[in-house]
Image (tube, protein in one colour):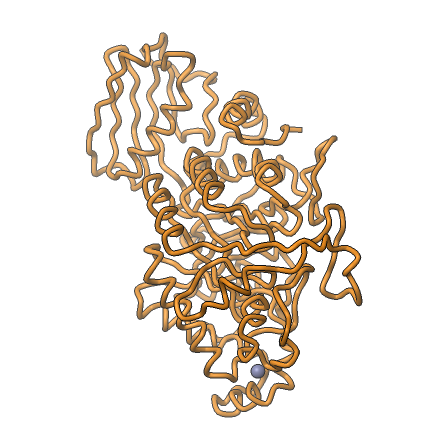
Length: 485
Ligand SMILES: [Zn+2]
C-alpha cells in the first residue's frame, strides 16, 4: 500500500513525483533490474523500490544514470526506503560554468566538479577556457598560446581589487608568476571521457572578439594596434579591456577559425560557446583595417562589426555540425536565429550598446540559456554571517538562487525557446578549489533543483529541510560546501 506523504528522504533535486511506502529494503539484497520503456521522456526514469527488489525503467542511458543518482541519495544506512518515483527534468540545459582563466583549477578539480554536478543531475559544463588573463588550451600551430598566453606575471593579492581602468595597480599585485597553466589534448580527452560517463556535455568557450588579450599578447599582429601589445603578457587586473581582436585583419579571423576548427574536432558536444560579451569598439573606430573592412562589407556603423564576425562563425560552426552559443550582447544586430543566446545581464551591465531582454531575444527566434547574474552568479556574495572569502560584489543568497525561474517573463507560447539555465562560477576573486566549492555549493544545489523541477519546484522551506542532510552528504565527500545561512 503506497501513500503520498511528506518525505524524510533528502533528495536534491526533488523528484517530480514520489510516493513512499512502509518499510525498507536492505541495500545488499536490492538487486536492480533495468527495463527499457520508450514512453519515458529522455533523461527521465521510473524507480521502484519494493521488498522484492529495485526496478528502474528508462528510455535512455541518461535516465538510467539519473535513477542511480536518486538511488544513491535514497540510501539510509544500509537500506533503501520503499518508494515509487517518476521523474524527468523540465529543462534540457542544466549547467555550471567554471572560469579556468582568472584562476586555474586543473584536471582533477574539473573532474570532481563533473562528479558532483552530475549527482545533482546537471548535464552541461560550460568551460571558460580563454580570456584576457589567461589562455588555457594548447592549440596546434600556435605554440605561443601555451608558452606565453598561459602565464601571467602576477595576480591580485588576496583582498585587493586591481582593475584595468586604474592608472596604476602594480601595488595590488603579488609579484608571483602564475602559470604556465593550460590543458593538453590528452588532458581534454581524459576529461571528456570522464564527463561522458556521467552524462555531462562539455561546452568549451573560446571568447571572441573581446576578452582575447592573453592571445593578443602572444600574437600582437592580431590586434588593431600591435605596438600596444608588444612585450606584454596576459592581464593581471580585472575589468573590461579595450584591446580586442582586429576584425579588419584576415589573419585574426583565420586565427579564430583555426582555434574553433580544432575545438570542433576535439570536443564532441553539439554547441560551442564563442563568448561575445563586453567587447568595446574603441579600437575598431580608429583602426584603418577595421574601417576598410566596414567599407568593403557595406557596414555603416561600428556596431555592425561584431554581428559580422558572429554571422561568419555561425556559418563556420554550422558547417562543422555545431550551433554557436554566446553571451546576450552577441545577439545585438543582424544575427541568424540559429545562434543561441546566454542571457546574463538581467537589465544592464556588460558593454553592449543596448540591452536585449530575454523576451526580445526569444521574439527574434533565438533559443536562450538563462543565467541572470541576479540569481545565477555564484561569485556574488551569499549573505552569510561569517564568510572568510572575497566576492566580486553583489548579493545572491541561497534563497535567491532557489527562486531562479528560467521562464520568468516569457509567455507560454515562447517558452520552448528557453533551454534551461546555469550557475556561473567566475573566478576573479576565487583563488583555489576550497574557495570555489564554498561559492558553488549549496547555491548550485538550488539552481539544480530549479532547472530540474521547473514548475513543480517544492518551495524553499522544503528545500532547506532536505539540504540539512544533503549538505552533510556533500561535506562527507570532501566538498567544501558553505553553511546554509
Ligand atoms: Zn582593427
